[in-house]
Amino acid sequence: MMVSADHHPDGGSFERLMREAEQAAKGDEDLKQRLLTERVVREFVKRLVQEQEAAVNYEISVLGFHVPKRYRTKPPPHAADDHHDHHQKKKRHFEQIINKKSSSSSIVTQEPKKQQRQKKRRKITNRTRAAAAAQVIEVVPEMPERFKNEIEEMGGSKVVLVIQKKLMMCDTTERHNRFSIPIGKIKNDFLEAEEKERLIDRGEAIEDVKLIQPCVSTVNVRLKKWDMDSSYTFNLTKTWYKEAVCNTANQLEIGSRMQLYAFRLEHNNNELCFALVNLDLVNN
Image 1: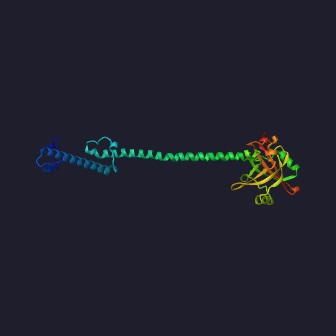
Image 2: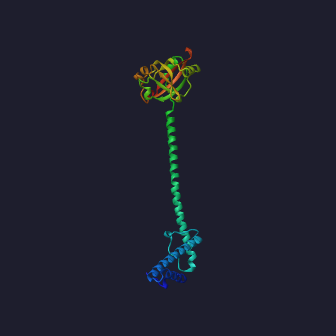
């Protein structure tokens, strides 16, 4: 590549480069041209970089920010009077681009919040439905008249609802032989102080407790406390499976909705008795 004086970046620097190349080549013309070419190219690139930096500094001073090339509009008009108006249009154009990007990013950041609100609404709806379902389950039907009559004939009084529950598998098997009364589901206190001491403190059972079955016949069962891991439960045991579950008239099946009432025989030393109501049997 031959370099002449017509291709220098500016007049002063080219002569300087020529002298430096001649001194370094020491009479070798080919080496002189090669060195001169390399130095001219180096100076040319250096000048381009300086011009770009100057352009960036100018954009920052006019627009307040640097405009990447890919976002630049058409070159400004050649008329010097329109130079300022062009930069104002350019500034507005890129402000629109930035605002558009900002709004897009805000949509992205707001999307998770929208999903969180939807999840929260679903949770509230689910809780409301669960509460409504629980309320439906906890509706307590009144004791059927035939049980009231049977208790009255026995001389019973002070009737209270002990528990309302669905029969579990363990309530219906011979191996378990018991009707469980979980402490957490007891609706009313049905034990006297002496009975609590006997059952809870001393761990003794109360034998021969009268139980009116769903078929309204009476059997004797045992009331006993069973210790759990961190709590305890009361159970009706002894003849439960043989007399109550095996009696087909009672229709005691897994899932049957049951009510257990407690009442007292005041004429017999305030004796504790129970009445078991099968709500599914009553409704049928």
